[in-house]
Amino acid sequence: MRSFRYQAMPSRVVFGAGSSRRDLGSEVDERGHRVLLITTKRAEPLAAALVAPLGDRVVGVCTDVQEHVPRETADAARTAAQEAAADCLLSIGGGSVVGTAKAVAVEARLPIVAVPTTYSGSEMTPTWGVTEGGRKRTDRSLSALPRTVIYDPELFVTLPPGVTAASGLNALAHCVGAAYQPGTDPVTALLAVEGVRALAAGLRGAVADPADLEARGAACYGAYLAGTTLAAVGPATHHRICHVLGGTFGLPHAPTHSVVLPYAAALVEDRTPEALRGVADVLGTLRAADGLRALAEQIGAPTSLADLGLRAEQLDRAAGELAAAGILDADAARRFLAAAHQGGWGE
Image 1 (tube, rainbow, N blue to C red):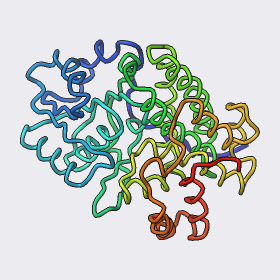
Image 2 (image 1 turned 45 degrees about the horizontal axis):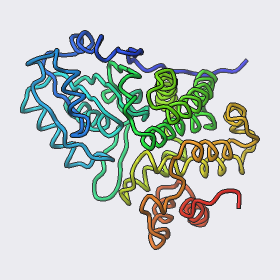
Image 3 (image 1 turned 180 degrees about the horizontal axis):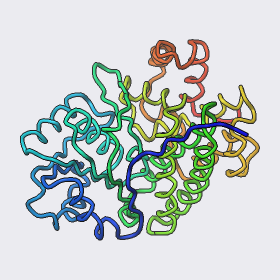
Image 4 (image 1 turned 135 degrees about the horizontal axis):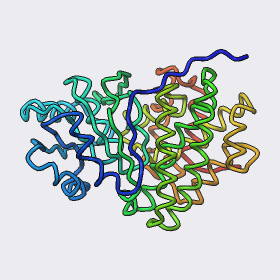
């Protein structure tokens, strides 16, 4: 008999088409009375429509959101919450939006209601991070965990195929990481494989037909499971590599995950061939890495770090950063980055 511990996160999940319109008001009612809305300029019209029924309970709006949550962004959002005397944070948007809300929540001890509009999975985790001085520092605190998460597939139908693909593979990477970590409990392992199944099917359908609500729902379900697995076991090698590359070189978060994922999976399978057997089976390939790369190509996700703006002359510095962080030794980091930079596969 196997012994293990599984710690479920104390979030409420509201899931279903139309849930953002139907349930947002009642969920906010339970968390606070003076709401600071955190969103992006791009998502502001959608957010404004969703919060209109809240009326003057929305006491402030913060749209100065950037990827990797620069310290200045976090400080500005916290100041906005203080000046508005907010007692609740409402994040409507992708991973950078909920990441900004988390940074405020940890320091100001305010609850978050999260309405995701991309497949980041971050809304289900107590992990938060801030970038300062070219380095992204992450930490873990239950204060960062949203109290309520509302998944509404209807909010995803206008998401462009490229964003759908990259953010979906970002979420899928959390499942893959949870599947191979040595300390993963059997409950999380099951959730991880189910998350891969749901995301792979949902992303294929959503890219082929952005208005397909069934596909959008499957992808949302997979992102929920992805965040749940990340919350249970923490970031794996893949996630740590992406944080270094993103924080140090300003690479876009989700596309970086998309590029790095097959190479990270190959690294794991080269060392422990059976580590990702469940993932490979769900993807219908002998090796998970091959299935992940094929999925990325099928849905049009990025496959090269060079295409994301990482220059060849930066590879040595990037390898040094990965080695300094204890993720890979310098030689392994150089080989890994050279392959991911070129983007070739099976050559």
